[in-house]
Length: 206
Image (cartoon, rainbow, N blue to C red; front, side):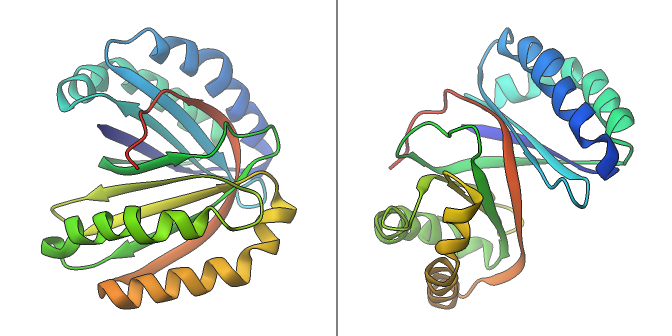
């Protein structure tokens, strides 16, 4: 399974308009595309930064969808008022305890490491980290997207609410530091977002 993420450094005042556009125009359009298995949108309402990620069952579906979503991406960029950066990923880990509620939030961690160790890292994450994440307050789901050639990974842990995400902060930080040290990975960035769109049919990998 594969994913395409579009990160837009938008205007905070335009975020709500952008959310409406993704919900009412983009989501219905991509749901009808062959091989579509999911769409999510993360929004930082304070900074205006938004990440829209679509998931596809194979590389063929990912490639077929590219020309069809190009105009929608441009329109989203215009509405949100910022440039768009597009990246493609493999979906290495996906585990859901339950569907995300209305006020769900996510803490996203970007890491970089040795590409040759990436498979080992994702295997270890599924075996050792997912059960421990499930013990965190308000845990909802976790996903890991990887760039095998670049040795990059992005991990999103979703919580039922911002209060519960904050309550889990210390323990989640300890887990992240322990795991990245063990795997020899470098944490590039950690950021939090509201999960404002979540239409996911991606099968479990754990």
